Figure 1 (tube, each protein chain N blue to C red):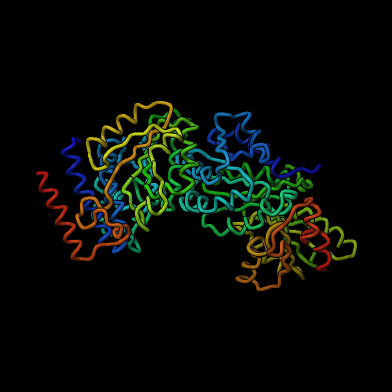
Figure 2 (cartoon, rainbow over the protein chains, first blue to last red):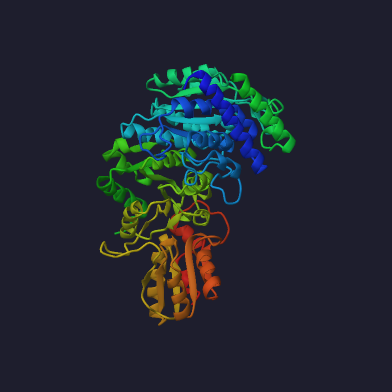
Length: 276
Length: 303
């Protein structure tokens, strides 16, 4: 897809996020919206995948370590054709396969079950190691929240990524700067994120996580880095795309009411029209 | 000849490595103690030392399993079941991934290292996680069989191994089945349910009781989950007294698992021997077993 098409796609992905969270009256819109552009580029431009064969051995893999942002992942998978977009409305409901947090055994296209923060990078390492052992060309993407990297296991895993020279691994930190109790700086600052990952042996790429062109380029650069893993630090805005949610920590884990839902969808429709 | 089940594990793993190329091994800086070094020397490309980072080791194993590998993961029981509980639960058991956690140095029989390293809660923690198979072998032959057998089950397993060298109980032709306990003798004066290092104590007690013309049977409950309900009910119906003994907290382990079956199926009194909800301390394994009440004498005095 070209940049224009991808930009239009991000609007559809965001609509899916809002639909899911609104119909569930539960879920995490803020962080889903901040990571939406990155996930859109991955699923619609970057990753080598076959929606008709979700378990294809040679596919690129993605671990959404910040699993509470499942609405963004589900919206991408649905729009990509893994399951009907209409099913997003069943998110978090009693008989739905769309669990609150990603479940690899229930949702086609989900490569790793996540939700308990801090665990995804270890699993992504395992996938990348297996790829090297089997001399496969697939790449592994792992999305971390900036608050999530306060978990110690992330840094254990970062050492492993580096020890095994996992150049088939690309970590993306969704740096939206907010966590439940406040800004990440106030709660427990992980800054400087770039220097931390660099000192753990990663190649660092810093981008604007809402600039489609920059996101595409970052993945291109990452692919050509040899003998070490890459960490893309994406500066993002929590709640991006829905004006009243942007940079509001209150929208971390709250669903919009009917009026807010209509406003959000109107927001997105006009965003889409603006692109025509 | 006495042998520790961790040694049997290392040997079985090496053999399994030759038979199954999908088997990979992860350790957390304890390969010499857990005996995974035997595998590591033969198959360096399939061995991953994750360092002193057990949580990461569990997650890495989970990722490897999603790609068709069969990871055997080892560290001390304290760190496998205790420190990494959340990773075992959420990254391995919930997605039902094919990871085999072989935890050595379980129980107070770790000895001199003391309470911080004496894992007496692991059976409890591991058997309450859905999808998990929990096995606690008593000797060399049984351990060797278990280590190979679990490679054939598609799903997570926890194997509880000991540091203490114990007696040979079975010969290599003994048949085992996961979920089926092994009965020794058919005395009707009582049943001694034991697991792991306490099976040899139960067999010793059986012999000594026989001299007093008290005929008991011993049941080796190596399969903690699935548990052999039929055997428990059979022994409750056929014998006059039920005793369980384990190198584990009396809360949550073998005795509790048997009690759950009895409560549901055939309410019967069970005398539970084990560590009485207290932490251990440094000392020789044999001394600790006496002090904490998990030797043959403790069984005998119940008859």
